Image (cartoon, rainbow, N blue to C red; front, top):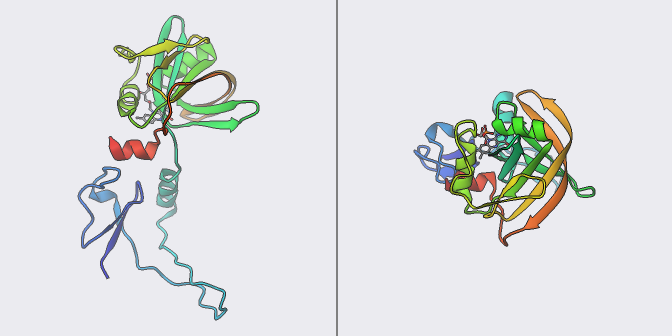
Length: 215
Ligand SMILES: Cc1cc2nc3c(=O)[nH]c(=O)nc-3n(C[C@H](O)[C@H](O)[C@H](O)COP(=O)(O)O)c2cc1C
């Protein structure tokens, strides 16, 4: 039987003697591939209803946890903030609804980020939900700090009622007011009430997996 290799980042399966040089889905190199052991049958009890259950060999716990976390699905968002006359924004995947009534969401923001500083100072932030052609926004807001650059230069944006800038080229935007926060070590988890929303486009949102596969 032909060997099978699994990408430990995105789960893509490759058949062949060797792993591929580059994962066609997420772009990582061959070192991220692991050889899939032959499936082992379990439950050999002669109960006609029981079906043999395939069990994969388990990596060590550190690896298993890392691989498990990689398989959580996320969207991609531009989180914006404004304080003391300065605007900034960053890319984030950690943005999720906590409750729908009241409309409340949470974001996880690194304490070193300039956006973190502005959210702490103002208690407010904006969320622009990227569409599936938003790769350039994810790169522009995610790979450099607003301490060194004006990330909004040349971009079409509008200002929301709360004062934050929002992307014109987004599926939807939201504005939120922080109502609680939790120290999560390197990051702060901001819990916030959504005060405004606007629908700008039809279409499907960008996911983190789609971004990795298409960047
Ligand atoms: C795809 C992607 C997802 C990211 N997700 C997060 C996130 O959830 N939280 C976070 O703090 N930083 C995240 N980042 C990193 C920040 O966007 C990055 O550190 C940014 O440069 C911070 O900018 P600032 O200093 O202007 O605030 C992400 C970056 C990328 C490219």
